[in-house]
Length: 205
Image (cartoon, rainbow, N blue to C red):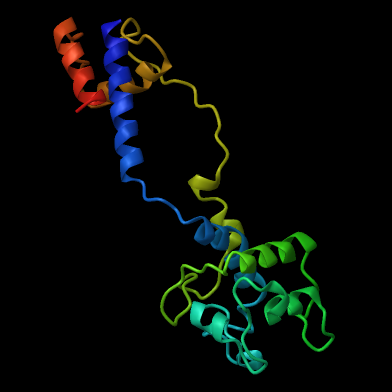
């Protein structure tokens, strides 16, 4: 029982540290990174970026400044005013002479994301005047989805351990396996007074 409480206290402490260290993510910036930037990179940067050979219509979309400034037709968007934003009109194909992307209209749910983003005030975390996608100047979405943070959780069987009598649960098996791999042994169970003192520091400080 002492071992279980000791391990639980450690987990609580680690959780408190992680929560305290994790910075708050701006919802608007998160929406831009998930819904807006990937679409711009996949469908627009080839013709409207700082690295494209010729910016069509003088429009640059891979920087925050370029997006707000717009091109030959004027500002690309008016924050919080979707109906007045040329970017949204181009995505909706409202004007036969102003359609983006020219190869085909984007799905309705994507266009709706752009409308929502503009209504939010067009939050954009990008800084500077140069593209911030990848060193090669392009974004590989398929490769990016392989990153561990975007993988769905999957069960991992607990590892085998030499001292099968010590673990009280599967978490203990993971801890013991790492200790045994480093040539270490678990510390003996704490006395009740020591255990209470540890819990006091963890919960109250």
